Length: 161
Image (cartoon, rainbow, N blue to C red):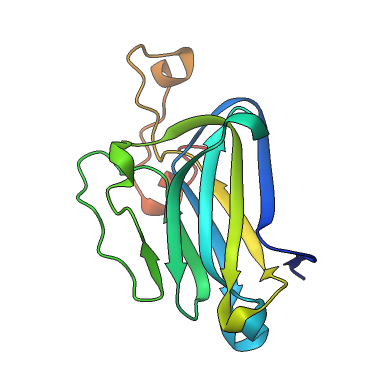
């Protein structure tokens, strides 16, 4: 199964949250070998509170993408800009200086163009991720009773993403 657009470009995917949410990256699954001209070649990510005040924060050029494509909306703290993957090249690798996450009520993914000048688009999956750890200045009740998980198998259940 996949999400399919129909009609003129740009094709828009809107993600709305009931309150401001922390978003650090989006992941999109594509398959160029199967979809060919239906595969996106340029994607724009915009954030805001609604349709009327969206700001473009990232534009990514894709070259025959295969599998999961990660679009970072903020740079993880203490990490340098990751080298671009040949199939996914962000136009702003510094992401405008955002660190850890961006807060937004509304995220819009715009497919600006497709490979081989295709008209319609196929996206097989879309995932939105928050920051890996919450950097809060005041500890809450959950942190007071936090378990010390030692093995990687148990650490995967330490936080909800």
